[in-house]
Structure formats: structure tokens, C-alpha cells
Image 1 (cartoon, one colour):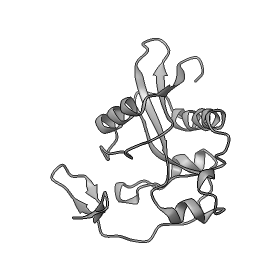
Image 2 (cartoon, rainbow, N blue to C red):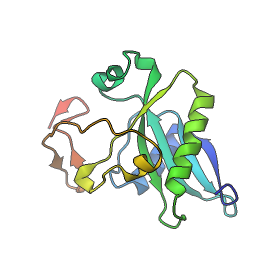
Image 3 (spheres, helix red, strand yellow):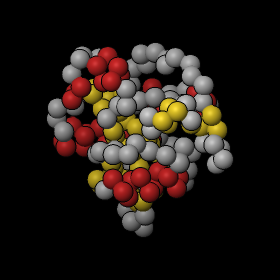
Length: 158
């Protein structure tokens, strides 16, 4: 993969724009950081994006060791379907190394797979994440664009 792609840190705005155009959720954390882009070496095209963010739940941040600053969420991941097999796990691995270089205080990375979209966490298992459980069930609502919305979207009941 090193001969086809390179990784570069992305500005928050550029990462959010990419995710809103390409990710099935069309949404992202308001302040993801850091964010990384996957670029095609030959064309210089942005073909993928990975966002880290502060976990939205205080319980998640404290669940592992009680140290909020040591925990970050792998918040969004999208890679174009034109990329070869195993690009996702390669990209995750490279981004985790970049994260360590950019912030060596973080040593716990959590992520969630969206079972409502048929995701089971396969890419995380392939990337050596450890499955620790399943979140409790919640009622979500579909908006006019077909996106799932939590009943307390941005702290406001819908």
C-alpha cells in the first residue's frame, strides 16, 4: 500500500466536508481531532478519511482507566470502494501510528460499529481491536434524508 497511497493530516473542516459527502451517516463530531486523509500517490486525490474525536460519553471516557485524556474515539472512517482489499486496516494502522506521534498521551482508542447499518466490527477485528461489548439498545428516528437520529440530538430532545 505504501507504493499507492500516502497519509496526511487533514484540517477539521476538510475532514468534515469529506465525511459529509461520502460517509453513510453524513454527519460527524463538531470538533474531530486529529483527522487524517488517505491520498492516491499518482493522482493526489483524497480517497479516504479517518477522524478521531473525544468520545461523547463521559462513561466511555472513564470506563477504561478513569483518565479522560488517555481515551479517544476512532469516530469516522471512510475509504473509496476503488481501493484494494485490506486498505482499511492498513489505513487504520498508519493513522494509529500518526496519532501516537501527534499525541503520546492517548493510549486507549475506542470505536463503535453501527449494527443498524449491518456493520459488525469486522474491520476493527482485522485491525486487532478487542471487542469489549455491545451498547444498550436505544430508539432512533430517521430524518427526512434517511439518516438515523438519536432522540437527544445535540442535547435537544427531538
